[in-house]
Image (cartoon, rainbow, N blue to C red; front, side, top):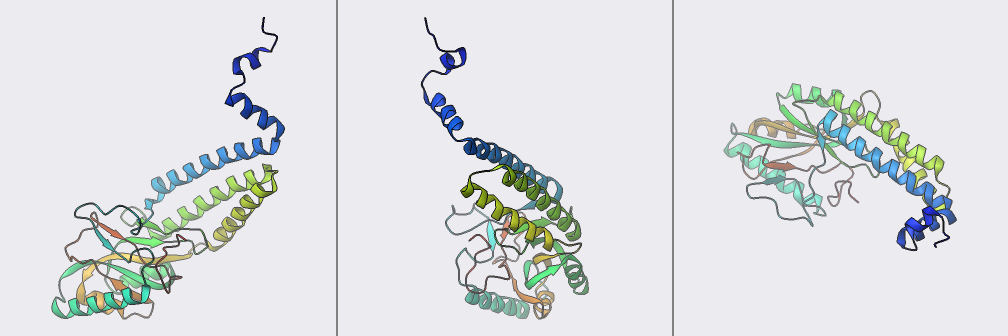
Length: 266
């Protein structure tokens, strides 16, 4: 007759029993795993809310990924590509098309030199009769990635509010985990993330400067005029003027990238 308790007899001496014994010996590991579960759930919730509320998605990374699908176009440099030569090439392309086909309509990516507020971008677009389709936004804080806002369903100001709500939710989850974790190495990681989210939340004011590019539809001539505005870094065109929003990936250079394109992924 087996003299072990019911719980022990059901577990035996296998990996599960060893794992539970390890948890008993290291309470901090139990807290960490519980915190990791909460954090994972929080991140999934935040991503779901961003997709549902703000219609936001990350721009695709080109280098090191599979080739694009047939018919898909890309506007923007590859990851790691030199920024200076790329911009000069695109400026020449716009100059040539404005000369040869001034009234031909096309999609274009208007890239700003600095992060702009929603109010400033709206004023810029209205003054130049540019039809805005999407905007690329980012909290200008390390570790925060660019996002794309579909302007058909969300204004820039509304998107900024959605970003603030998402960061606030992430901060709440991280603070809860950091308060429970006892292991110093794990606690340091969460504490660092908490500080980054606090910095991000502080930058997301009523009208934060988060917009660094907009996808517009206009004529080559009109785009050449817009490119001469002091706040514009350059205007990026698709190789094919008939490219559509549905089959084109737009990945603008962020203001911090002065040598190579990183898209804040490093």
